[in-house]
Image (cartoon, rainbow, N blue to C red; front, side, top):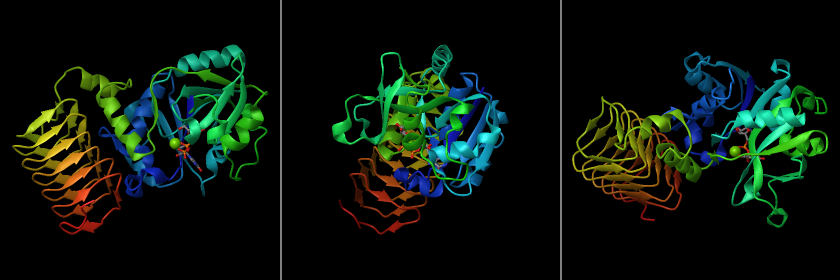
Length: 368
Ligand code: GDD
Ligand code: MG
């Protein structure tokens, strides 16, 4: 079975992480994010994946190659400019099979695509959308269903007063190629959510209310939530199964740990946790990260080569690759430091502050 993954967005809501790394390969629990999607797809019989890229496509290709390591054939399509979710689909037309999956490339999920496919076949649909429930549908595509599972209405990013159901588009579709016929010609910018699905209502558009885990990882808060959920095996992933085999934190053999690591946590190769430091729970240290004497890192992610100075406290924060946090700093509340940021000692950063790559904060500059 074939799958087309849309991975051409700029990931603006995940900046500054996505200022230097394209969203599909941002490390999540030390693996390129999209690998979770590829393993999930493979588990439902997908062996042929077309990755629809735009932004930093070469960087994605450099990380994932031809997919051989994952046992999937991986091909890349590069749009000349972002064509939107529908334009990207049309751009891929020549390569598409009669029936295929189409996925938003930023969801962490274990929904049952095989059951969705079964329903798709039973109803003879032209398009079947996986639907999930969320507390607040306003940032998503709201879907109203008829009793027989046909979609009655599709409202992208509904206003508060339009919200009368919690069911939203999960960004996982099964499409028949003939659903593309009525679309504007290739090369035009088209939103599948605003221009294609509303037109398919009454013409073979069905919804499949899915159960299971589902999260769009596109903001720092949700990126951290996804990290915790993989570590705690709330979502079915191969990484989570490996981690939950034991109640002890997972520490790579080539890490040097003299401080304390609290499960669930993952400590990669070449990390250093100095005596008196506490790491965890729900914490991921990327390769070569360092936590200094008496520092405390909790509910956070340190990407490769990030360093935290002595007696600093890091909580619910993301520290970018190669970023350095000085001594006696306090960083919490969804703060994101971009790649190679330097935070001098004695700084206090809170409430979702985002520091862009390469910025150098002098000692004691911010006491927010
Ligand atoms: N190739 C390509 N070209 N991909 C694109 C483009 C483009 O021009 N624009 C967006 N994408 C990709 C993004 O990289 C992402 O993986 C996916 O399409 C969806 O775009 P987002 O920008 O993340 O959309 P959203 O999260 O606001 O809303 C979408 O996802 C929700 C579920 O997470 C919609 O499909 C909603 O209906 C849905 O509920
Ligand atoms: Mg999204």
